[in-house]
Image 1 (tube, one colour):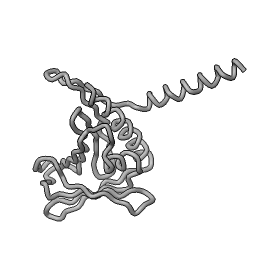
Image 2 (image 1 turned 180 degrees about the vertical axis):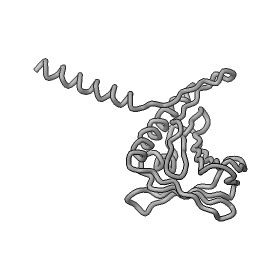
Image 3 (image 1 turned 135 degrees about the vertical axis):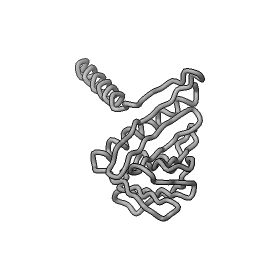
Image 4 (image 1 turned 180 degrees about the horizontal axis):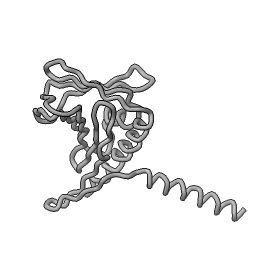
Length: 167
């Protein structure tokens, strides 16, 4: 009986440590403000790349589309389609006007996870469709492995970002 109990404790510990190893976020400390930031790093997909960055005050979802001379402003939209469902999310670019192919969606960092951010982190994304003010569209499409990697990294960042609130 004692061996069985020890075995279960070791099994629980192993699953805890394997999940901790799965959570590989980039952690940076600003040298001036000493505030900590977290990032998933860039996830390259067919058609572009995306990253999720967290600070004490906000979570920034940044999308990079293609290369060169793609202009986006506050009228640019981002539609996210999820695998196996007809649900989709619609966002407007909340970043600055730029011709570098960059879009941002900002969420407030809070003890409870925003509904839309939770969907981005927990549901497999089938396609992201980005449209600029000139009605030109670009699609980002991940494969199954990229979907899984994104959900693990984004879910981890969302949970870890709550710890930044107490710093």
